[in-house]
Image (cartoon, rainbow, N blue to C red):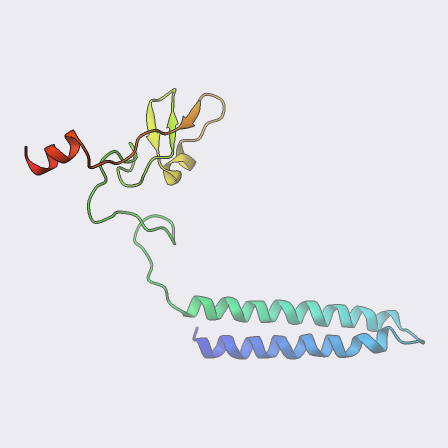
Length: 141
């Protein structure tokens, strides 16, 4: 589906929306007809829906590169592994510590691990550092 088709769908939705708005004064006139009010409401709502569909199709036509594996929109796997990262994926900065299972979890892994019946969570104190012994070990000293 190309972006041009999305533009045409947005235009059709705008025309249907405009027709619904133009019928509205006739429905609210002194000699009002309830069926015209229903036509005006349907025209505006269907026109809005069609225009939204066109915007959705244009957004899909942008063709963002898909990531293999995992959900879309997440940027995982940095160039090198973080020291002191998540105990499950070993990639991201941990924000929660499960006291029952003794694991530090990043926000992505927390959704898979979460169990309110048995787990007790506290904020994680683990931070990736490059000072002291960690820096000396990295340099080979």
